[in-house]
Length: 355
Ligand SMILES: NC(=O)c1ccc[n+]([C@@H]2O[C@H](COP(=O)([O-])OP(=O)(O)OC[C@H]3O[C@@H](n4cnc5c(N)ncnc54)[C@H](O)[C@@H]3O)[C@@H](O)[C@H]2O)c1
Image (cartoon, rainbow, N blue to C red; front, side, top):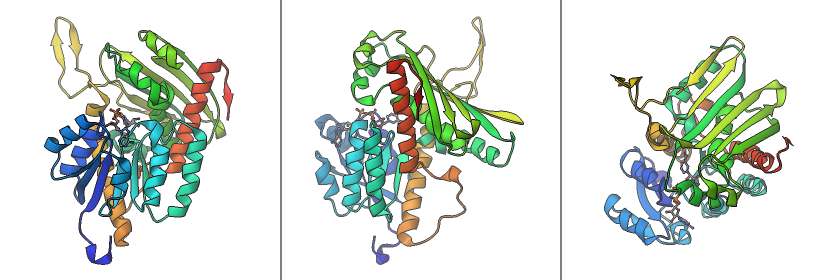
């Protein structure tokens, strides 16, 4: 962005128009002040057909290289399969773009390290990894309360990511490229735990799992329910649970325990504040998927990224920001993959893994 361009919207190109990419594209097109969705890219004709009707005048490409060659773009927004993220981030940085990339950074620790190393050459460009829970208003409030000393010294996080069972076996097909339950789901809880506990270094992990419903996962060395313990330096701890088989909906929650109290975030996964009282008892309906639960978080995350890049380009400082207002860095995402990968190895070997 040239100095005479100050004030014009940030031009963003989305790569990947699948399950989540379509949501990000619509947010950027219609709901993020200061941004224009200028281009989108997917190798699938179905995705491009959807984009022609669902998105405003947006240039469409079938090849990521074409998106990067679009000189009008300031930033790319990667919502592509996890195994592609690392290489696509590096290529985007080399093409001079700011980068937002969905989690996880990579399924491979060495690849994460390579991106962190390479990104040092591009310190003028923003790179944020999409751990959107940091932008959920309830998680954000808990973070602020922690920093204000509301529960004394926090030392333990319990966190879970549990999805509605899909009898059609979406998660089984997805498993081949997702990295398995710990790198796909628990990676969010790992990031939350590190963020809430002050980014401690992990020292040892242990994981176990079960195949409760989806036998097809065994072929990928994956499970549909996983539990894990993570020890951090300084005596801090985290306990994780992930499931693909919930009967009631998406049940994602976290709890942080301190020396003078505890904070629970989203313990009852209710979709709204209506309670039903009838012959079956008293109950609330559950959030169906992660997207309804974190719809606001995805939007606030996008707004924060756009504001951060525009502030960078205009040479203006953002207003008072705390860690709570910022997304995960490449270094944060590297640590999340390091721990998630160790959990995967622990599941496979049945042994604790020392980091
Ligand atoms: N933050 C979250 O809670 C959350 C939730 C779901 C998915 N995700 C992440 O989002 C990413 C995408 O997940 P999804 O569920 O949307 O997957 P998906 O398979 O539905 O969509 C992937 C899209 O990428 C496209 N694609 C494949 N190769 C490409 C390439 N070389 N260039 C451009 N596009 C390409 C595919 O055509 C498809 O449109 C994954 O990394 C996943 O971990 C994050």
